[in-house]
Structures are given as structure tokens and as C-alpha cells.
Amino acid sequence: PTPYEVWVSEIMLQQTRVEAVKDYYVRWMASLPTVQALDNADLDTVRKLWEGLGYYSRMRHLKEAASVIVRDFGGELPRDPAVLATLPGIGEYTAGAICSIAFGLPIPAVDGNVLRVLARLKADDTDILTPQARDQATRSLAKAMPKARAGDFTQAMFELGALVCLPKDPKCEGCPIRDLCRAHKEGRQRELPVRVVKTKRKTVDLTVLVLYDGKRFALTPAKEEGLLAGMYGLPTLEGKLPLGEVEGQLRLKGVIPRMIEELPACKHVFTHVTWRMIGYRCLVDRLPEGTIGATKEEIASTYALPTAYGGYKKWIV
Image (cartoon, rainbow, N blue to C red; front, side, top):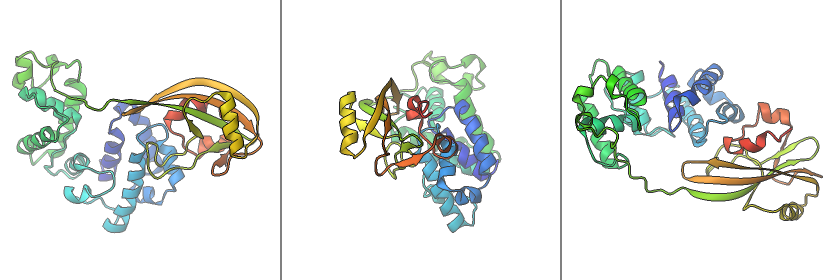
């Protein structure tokens, strides 16, 4: 694979299952096969290709990094992991994956799969979510990594964790390093690794509005920062508001509702927050100031909406 292909695939696979990524990756590469193509693409095209994949800052960082690579490195990803790690969205792990898989350099790449494999291999009770565990794993991999086949080694470690050394039900009977695994010998493979999760997911109540003026629907402009940075949205109010209050909020914005229809409640779970949503579909005399008016055809082809609004997207008809 080319460095660009490795980079895009690794960014897409961050906190996302392989099965969910496959179709997105194929579509992306068909539309944006090179760093130069990504740099030249307009942001709406990139947003649309990423629509539904989640963690939208990844998409924004890819676009920003492509511009830096074209401007400062002649369109070629740098081979130095320290330089790679200065690019938007590329950390130590992604830099290691690119260097080892694409360039064949013996640079460790430590992800959750690798941390799990090493914790079981050594029967290590260290919390794998700590920096100490990651540093220790990086040192261990650096010592074990063959210089001649660094990329194969990196991918083998990924595959071992993803297909064999599974989080809840490790397939020890088919593991090629079972005889070396202390956790297996001690019967502790299901106890390890240790993961101390400290963050409690909070819940936020929201009211989502599908506003329609007879021709166009209202979209909120993409924000630079925040949970859905880089993506368009639907007008959203804090709290679960009754119909009368929604009507009042619209009138405060100078919008007269001609018809309001209550929509089903929806929920979307992010990593650290859960959105509990109720919705209304409103026919209005005009769209609120500050929103973007788009037809259903334009939303389908051009304007990317996050998965969080998926339960209400079907009402854009």
C-alpha cells in the first residue's frame, strides 16, 4: 500500500470497526486517490464522503494535513515519524503505522489491540489506558521488531489482536503464540488486560427541528470546533421542549410556524456523551437567519449530516 492509503485507512479505523470502514475507504479512494486530490477537493465533497463515519474531526484533520503535505513536503508523506506526528490528526501510533507498513521502517505502532496482546502475553496487570503501559509496550515492540519485515510484523500484531486475541472471548486454541502467553498458562486471559475507565458518559437532552419553507430545509453551518466540528447539522435547542415552547422559540427568531408535527424520540451515543432527542417537523414562512437553505436533493448529494441526526434525516422529504 502507498503511504497515503495507509494514512487514510489508519485514520478511518480509529475507534471504528473494520466492517464499518470498508465501504467508506473504497468510496474515498475512488474519489480522492492521492494527497493532491484530497488537497484540491472542496470541503463539502470531503464531508459527504465521510458522512456517517463519525468522529468528524478526523475528516477535518485529513484535509488540513493534506494541505500541509502538498505545501511543505511536495505531496509526499515524510518518512520521519517525529515529523509525521506534527501533522494534524497524526499521533505517535499513526506515525508508527505509516512508517512501518508503508516505508518498512522498524518503528513501533501501539494501538488497543497491541496493548491487549502484550498485557496477556506478559500477564501484566498494568492499566493499559495509562501512558506508562503505552510507553512500556512501545519499548517491548521496538526490541522485538525485525528490521527486514517491519510492516509485516506491525500488521501481524494488529491482526492477532483484532482476530484472535479478542477483548472478551480470546481464541486461544488458534493463537500462534499461545505457548508463550503467561495469561493463558495462568488461566487469566479473560481477566486481562486491566482497563480502568474513569470517564462517566453524561446525558444531554435536545430538541431537533426539521424546518421546511416549502422548498428548502434549514441546516446549521459547519462549526470549527466541538463534537460535530466540520459537519452541517439540523437546528437544535437545549432540553426537551414542548410544542408550545418550540413555537415560541421560532417566533423569537422572526419565523412563523404554519404547521408543527411531533417526531419520534431518538438517541445517539458518543464516546463521552449520550444525546436524548425529541424532534419536530415544522413548515415555516421562512428559514431562520444564520441557517443554510438546502433542498432534499442537495442534502442527499452535497451537504453531509452526522449520524447523530440519522433518526431525523428520513423526515427531510
